[in-house]
Amino acid sequence: MTATALPWYRRALNAVRCSLKLRMVLVFLLLASAMSFTFIAGVQKAFSVGWREAARPLLMDYVDRLANEVSAQGVSPDIGRAQALTQRLPITIDISGPRVNWRSHPDQEHPRWRRDQWRADREDGAGWGDDADWQQLLQRATADGHRIEFGVNEAAFDRRPKLVGYTLVALLTLTLLAYLYVRRLLRPLDHIRQGALRFGAGEFGEPIPVRHAHRPDELGQLAATINTMGHDIHQMLEAQRALLLAISHELRSPLTRARLNTELLPESDEVAPQRQALLRDLSEMARLISDLLESERLAGRHKALRREPTDPASLVREVIDELAATQPAARDIAVHLAPDLPSLALDRIRVRLLLRNLLDNALRHNAGADRPVELHVRTIEGAPGIEVTVRDHGPGVPDDQIPNLAQPFYRPDAARTRSAGGVGLGLYLCKLVAQAHGGGLQVRNARPGLEVSVRLPGDDREGAAGAVQRRV
Image (cartoon, rainbow, N blue to C red; front, top):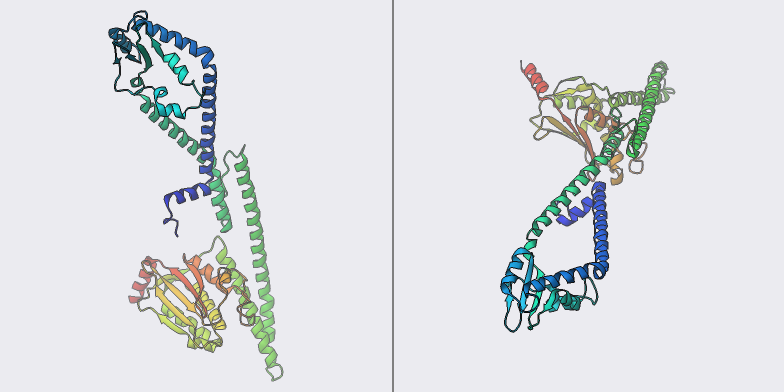
């Protein structure tokens, strides 16, 4: 099931699990709610404890005064006096007896303490008092047998929904402010993550920004530490690259002298096999050094391509003819060229190197297969450029080793023998050439064999200019 197909509550739960900001805001809300509940419960408990000793006598005295005012000193209730009292105060008055039965607010329900369900749910002695307490507080009897019952007019609390809405808006505002503050507080984590991704991709030019560098907090110290680590790694990689370039340059001269001396050996029947083997090894070493130098140039920050209008079809035929001079199996390559291949602005030397490495790698591992190597060149749909796909029909490689094939000096020896394999720079160079042109390389098992696809985007303006020049 994809992430978009999950129910909303599952997506929300996953978002909370993966977001430190949301979890911190939830902790803030839970802490605020717990503190508010504890405070309100404590205040209510303290008020209920002090009720009998302080508020209860005052309320009883006040109800006595109200009853005397309604019943004319306790003799007989007067409806006119009761009406005047309810208009002046936010109270209700219920009068019941032998002569007078009147309610000031007949549409309002009886107080909760008079409802059977509420009385059944209350615990004895809990809260503000039991039923007997409320009857003693709010009910009064007159000398002529009437009962006067007082209550609170609920119309006085009509603003309660508005207050609840205001409280909810205030709570949401505080939550939003808390989230924005936490987001700002943890923003360095996003910078650290982006910086770590840049360092992992080999881009060390832009350090991680450190907030308040003169007095950094814990996250600022972490960012500064990662910047120092990235700087050290960059220096180490640059030193390794410089050493590799220096060694490669220094090895060219003795290799050239060794090849010259080998070619000067007599071509007798006794010496010829050793002479050919030595020349072959020297050529392999020279090619390795050239590949190392080219890979370091392409991997550097200042790589430059010499683009020129290039016909992909003619370039493919040139590379196959060169390979056929040393590898007869190259003549059997099944070439499939799209009929509408455009002329593109490419670096011919680098693309020639890419094609040579792809085909040479496929020919080595296609040895003994019943089908030839396949080469497909087609256009990229919706964009200027071409896609080159080379497939062999050899043993392939394990799926778990596919992501590592384009790494330098990586060899899946378990799938391809060392005698048939190279040194592990071919696909690495192809990836660098594709990336230098703005494209990419993809490797997958074709079963049987291995399939390598390379995308080479082109420049419409340069390609079109080249095509016009050729037509002119």
